[in-house]
Length: 106
Image (cartoon, one colour):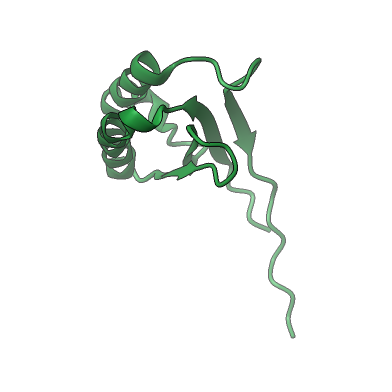
């Protein structure tokens, strides 16, 4: 069984249509900084709610990318520009992976 502790952080943001280019530029900086540290980073736009975006950072428990100066600076820049609470009350959540059982032989 894989007992490697993985973490997933999700952040929801409200991004007005006219500010998508600004958001995309800031998101690219976070994606790059996190990728340099071996993390995975994704951003998605809601299919149902215009102006709603969700970001994911996924990393190992022993390599929390939020301790990296470049990653923190990129997160702070996004929060300062697009930090409106949406939806209330929580816009940021952290998840811990469940252990994965070994594959079942055919």
